[in-house]
Amino acid sequence: MGVPVGVVTFPGSLDDRDAARAIRRAGADPVPLWHGDADLRGVAAVVLPGGFSYGDHLRAGAIARFSPVVGAIVEAAQDGLPVLGICNGFQVLCEAQLLPGALTRNVGLHFVCRDQRLRVESVATSWTGDYREGQEIIIPVKHGEGRYVIDPDQLEQLEDEGEIVLRYVGNPNGSVGDVAGICNPRRNVVGLMPHPEHAVDALTGAGTDGLAMFTSVLDTLVHRGSLDPGLPRLLLDDPAPTGGTL
Image 1 (cartoon, rainbow, N blue to C red):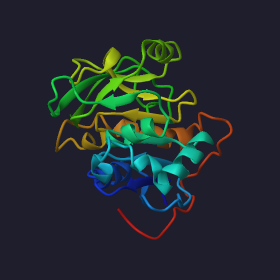
Image 2: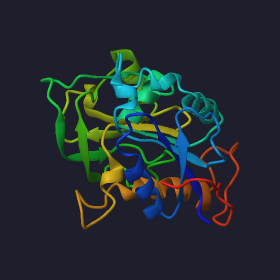
Image 3: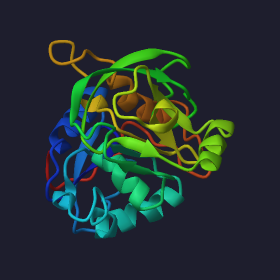
């Protein structure tokens, strides 16, 4: 059995099955996690996928932040669990204060959907170790509220601490500093607006540049052990949780 990686489903999630497929292609076992259940089922990492959780009522991610599963994820992330938030998942992570800043309406107020060039700024996270620093990759974006905002002092702190993970090459939404993705100080939590799960197959979409994000976390957990010495090292033949599929 492969490493169990949880994929959360909220009411309004769109890309949970795509994320599960990407995890499976990377060699891990996707484990479904329901928004109303605080049990993380023993997973080794978690993906919060894209979509419109709870219909984006109030604002994107604002209600999902109070769901039982997110409460459990926050607690586990503080103990070092690798967490990846994609698009709406990034918005949820910011609302839950696992990541700083906020995502607001795109400049021009238009929904943007296109293959997007990105530059990898940090490979020192649980989710980017299989890239090269400075590498340019193509990953699709599709969002209307993807403009990352943060006050200048905090942006400078992100820069100084190496917590900007990805930058846009050709900013599609007006994000400050061309920020496409960031991480927390412990580097186990990463949020990004682009969709790596849509770039894992050479036959469809933008290519396979997104696959390394999912193989990176397996490399972190299996081959190198955790980036955080407080986390246990996992083995590929550990039994995965049962009871549900994605």
